[in-house]
Image (cartoon, rainbow, N blue to C red):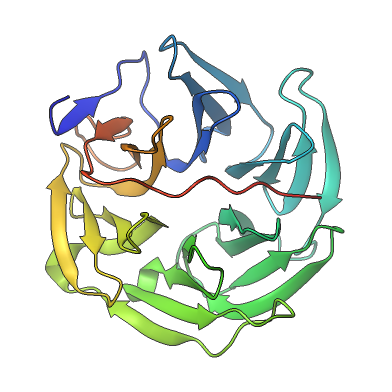
Length: 284
């Protein structure tokens, strides 16, 4: 494969986000938040399918028991892709009508870590939450303007989270009871790097970050040093994930909203030259 490949399809995402590798389906899932779509790419056949919802769709995470959990509007729902049925699991911000859920990841304990943000992307009304396997939701940090990209260390000792509006990735120790230690700046982006968006760890402990406004994904060392970037033919890069049986393929999402670019909103595959970590499932 060349270093960058554009996945052929008949549309572009307004705000592509949340790529998720499903090993049990040999498929990649990702959202188009503003179009309220959940997309699916079969790695076996190349077929693409989608589900359309009635609110902004921030993310989808697989359940260990089958199906998905999705962040829809301000709610967290169980979702059965075979029937299209949904069931309310949690509602962390019932009175925050100005907010929506934006980005999330599951950890090795089967919990979900998810952020919220203002719909207008300009007010610091968002928060960071932990969803336990019994459906309990706990606010663990805030406020946020654009909460993005949880990335959880392979050993579960810490996680990274960002406020894209602050151009800073923060580090939090994870305590045994699921609470977080203090918010510590980990990587402060330089203006030419763009702004940090979605991110994921690789098997070597390095961090890959989608760089909004800079048209690239960038790899950082375990110490937070910038190592290399892969340029992409779209400026608004939103997130990335490893996929494939060997976890050596990387898919990257982007947004076409507000830009006049031929490949804005495309789904890309890049050759990362390394392997990723297995996708974690929600155990609730």
